Length: 499
Image (cartoon, rainbow, N blue to C red; front, side):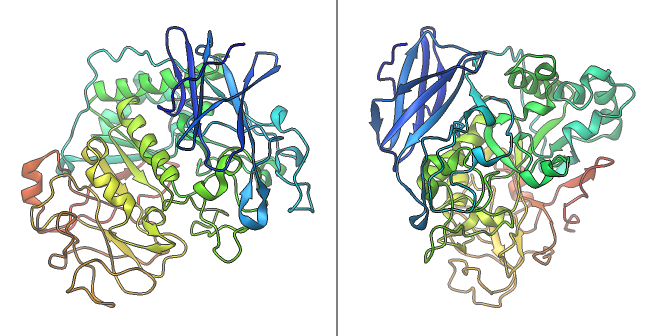
């Protein structure tokens, strides 16, 4: 099979009329091998010859949608220095837009031999891990338009894609527990009868069950164990169940289109604070094998260990441009290509840590506030992580009117480990203050409710897409109403703040 130079952007697998461009990031790799698999699982390896700015790329003529693929990275394996490349491990593309297969837990998926974490495993993981799928871009959206409902009129219904329709008698059995089942006529009729204006879907990014659950014959119902930030979870797809790998992408888009037609927005619960790879003894499935130091926070004095602020074994490294790019690219992809209307950020405080310390004006918040795509959708934050010693409250933004694009601003309720906001009038121990993302000063203390760090509380911010709403909320915190579906997680919205 031929391999042409290709292009470094966009990252991931991008199809054209003549073939597919593959591009993946790794600053530490000595070489990167593209692995193509046929339906029988036979592997063909193509060593990528081009690298620009840490991005390895190549174009393969004749390869199109449905092609299964992965990568192997040749590079340093030195856990004591935080480096964990191992060419014996097949790696999932961090930008894979569809995923086929599951993880089979065993010694093969570990980067080291059990009991010898400093040694490099020689076992091939390919038969035991999922592959990426090349996906076509085409989809008939018809006249789809975002409902664009103002925050003041928003009623959010938090639910689980599978749990919502799994036992619904009006949903056809073949569609129960799927994206298609969520928009079956009986399901849409139920949502309409409730009067909700948005569904907030518990994690739909592709996730995997951890080994402990599998050993007990259990599964991860909630989905807070992400492996693919661009791929809809295959287990929620009726098309995948019917034997059509990759069908989850079009099925998800059809679900969004149907909800929009019913006047209902789609908000995703996203988990950008950690991945399914766990701690230093976890499996090598993707990010860890490409560039461990770029994707994960490591302990400075002992970089073999992860600096974990999530309680899951690892935390994504939002200090790294590679990791920040992945997060922002994923968010834009779900808005532009999948047409979703907003996001709820799980453990959002973890995304606001710079060099491990919480910062209410962190690089992530700056990127979101200036982004022409993300700044214009609904954004909700869970304002804590397990390392927080303060409660944080998401508050309505600008006080000076200098910025019209900032949706997110987070203020610390008390001092502790959190870094003070960049305002000369703010001092440790001060009550929560509204931070203007335009001039970096703090306005008057907002009328908002703070919660202890162990409480999963959410508040939504103002939307710059509605200028009148900006004026109405300039001196108060705005919180949308949230409804919870039976059998799903408890409502996490703060009470609406009075005028």
